[in-house]
Image (cartoon, rainbow, N blue to C red; front, side, top):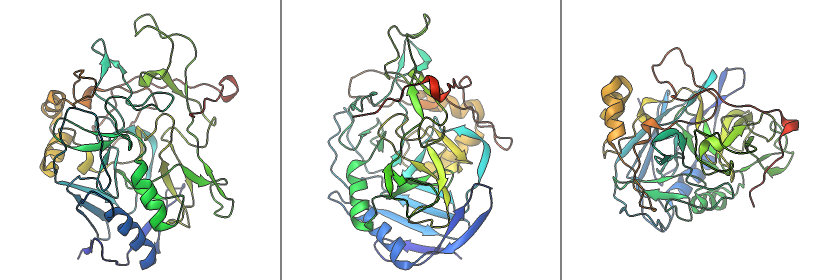
Length: 368
């Protein structure tokens, strides 16, 4: 029988503690701790509806997709109430290789708003060169608002980067600077940019965690857009192992206020990739849909099983842009980064292997 957790009521349930070795153990969480998270998700100036429930296998998030903060998106589309149902495993496990999240929502915030960091804009019909929604200096592009979100053609509001107001609400309500923001599709938690200096020591103090992606040096190739690598496109970046605090999925293993025995967790950073473009574990089918329909449950299954027909439907969808430029659905987006290969799925990233560079050869670029 499922346990139901309705906002803003407080209930006790167990959260899974996932460890680097793949083993999972459960720890009973205090009613007070989870209650603060739920209250944070339900508060805000704009009224939203979020229901979170849990059984032994999954956490279920049902939402009307309306954010709990003000929206000043500069795009041409109007925000619409959009019913969505997401499901994440209680006991997530990591895979040997990461899996690209495009063209799907990477995860969902506790306020019910999805994370979709990539865009549908590309250079010269070449999907190897997909434009970024946020510049290398953190400037908001393509009509993004103060929370790095905007509204797509279907009326769905979504985040491309740091949901600033929501994170502030979480930090204030939970009294934790290292705030739980949401869950990725594979079930691992998503946190704000703060983490412990020593990943496994909660007494080591907090610091802003840095991405290990850096701008490439020099000019783009002759068959690509002209100019130097400046962060306009996703392929302007490369993963430089150990140059920052986080791995290629923009995450790491460690303890958190909500997982004191440790877990793998993702981090939202102020520099690329902002929100991870790859899953460390196996995504749930409820996230594998980019058509933007109002009821995504049936559509998710069709997208996962539908082969070419489902992909064609995804490409027909267009996301509205503040600059007035057209773009196809993110189903065709390609991303520079680690390839995701999983033997139990037909979901494969459509991009070449990543470029890696030794740390000593790369200067660190900080976002002001």
